[in-house]
Image (cartoon, rainbow, N blue to C red; front, side, top):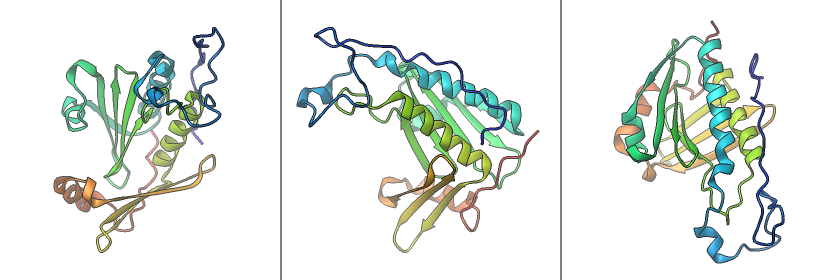
Length: 211
């Protein structure tokens, strides 16, 4: 539960297609999208609620938990975000080192790059093109669920050095039990070394300390 957090009032705008009919984003294609849909982003501003909700979550975390917050433009460069696309790049470090750190990078698209713990990274929206047809309401729910898992101590990172895999586990009521793995091949040696230094021995990050 995100105690004390309230999602800002969000208006999901209606957009019309070439026929003047409302576009049902998130459920747009009955079958395979047309090929050119994967190269088009007709209404990128439909993702603006991602910024609004992420900003509200950021303010809530800073008010509720004992964390240090600072701007880090260098993080945006590591995530290959151009200076022209960057709005803000923020790191949050809980006072207790057993807790997962977090980073949020806001871009002009609009999108948000997320970094949790040692090695978890995600972009919301993941793509944004018309072909992928991502649902903004679902995106906002997932964003809040990820944050809930991190701050409540329900986020786990398991490093399997024999299989060269990292597995991320999220266990919160809304998500249930979510798991995903990725190969070390996609991770730089410097990040892997840093992960070895900061990860708890069992991979279980502690709940963030409340003020």
